[in-house]
Length: 190
Image (cartoon, rainbow, N blue to C red; front, side, top):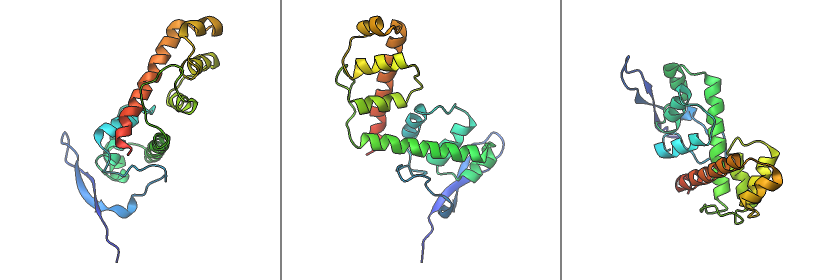
């Protein structure tokens, strides 16, 4: 005999009222990736917010639906109806978040995240950090790699590669921010 656990679904509370979870059958919920350890309803709000900071998903109904699914364990079909979001878009973005979580967990499984020091950043870690950004441009990426992995001074890179100092400084700061968010999210990935 198989037991069925109950998950909350979205209950219509009326105009202007908060949405409330109601129990539903869990057999309809399935993880879309083997890499992620995210379980709907077991994701801390802060963990969800950090995951969203690694995506290009804009705040709005779609993020609200993803939050309902991952944090509040509300079934997607109920979120689609109540929040009027596109089902296929919600499914794609759910898979994207699960895959992102899997990539982060896989990366974190082989290293401890610490402050970045020029010349002391592992090339694999650097590549992962860059993959979490939308940085483009060969010269910029080469300059960042030479700075973080090889230890080159920014001043020298500006002269040799022709990258603007202000751009290099901003992107260096962004890499530090991504690393800090990765350190924060690592607390949830153990």
